[in-house]
Image (tube, rainbow, N blue to C red; front, side, top):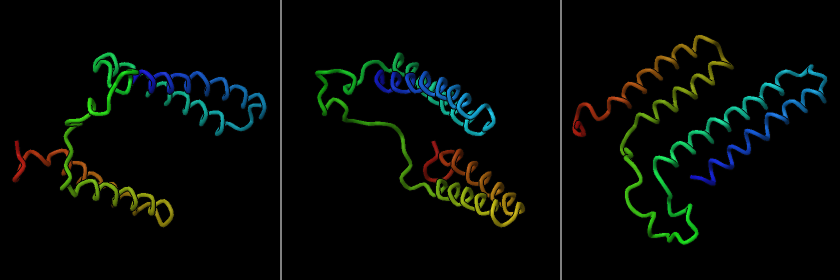
Length: 133
């Protein structure tokens, strides 16, 4: 993860001066672009910090070494729920909220209720039923 953290760190140090240059070129009249570029720099910095912090905890991966082999990265990568329907509910609620911005704000409230139900269902998916721990 060293390479990834460096790439995002460089992105943070790139976008902040670009935002200042953009501000000078627009005579500080176009604040949406300035703030957007600053936020991209902040996001790149946060991601780079997270990846650097995780790289210290995890150690070198086969991708980080020059002598790393493909088979060294094999094995379990994490815990995933291939049978879960809750991400579909959350996706539908996000699509409904986006539709609510075009149709009417009252639809956003319905989407928020759907999102709460989907999020609670996804979080507590392994607390009951066949897959309870």
